[in-house]
Length: 238
Image (cartoon, rainbow, N blue to C red):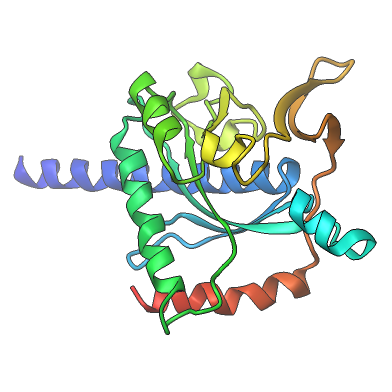
């Protein structure tokens, strides 16, 4: 009996790990294909509480546009640190507190000799397969950390036990806090997330900037490789 219980526990853990991996890959695809992010999976024992890490490529800030004029870059980058949670129970505020700790650790390293060039603005991204509780949303809204909460439910409740059959792009909720999307936040009150429907009835998420649709864009692979050295130094310091 004891052996059976051990085997059952091991199988349950393996299933949970598999489900989590599939959800991370699903999240990664949606964020890169539709929301102008270039990310990579970094999960593991030394991941520092981070599942996805990379950049969010958005139009330049108003200050950059004024300072640089026509020479202003077409896109600026924001550093994204993300956690992906494929859990059946609703996401509680403890996950927001945990993510705040992750970002504070990252910022402490960025101001040290370990990684002095990690100075880009930071965004905390929580992606959940289950809904966020009201307390979680309120906690994120009151946080000084720029937060983006993204609910990606299974495409069909009957398929919840088989994540590999799910669609990639379904979104239940997208919420960001004032530190990120407010008029004094990183996005200067200009960003909107919308769900676009085609004539055929299919839909996809999209970003709108200052009332205009923002094309999802990321740099080529060469530019991305240049950022991996910085990320590797962060994880080496764990």
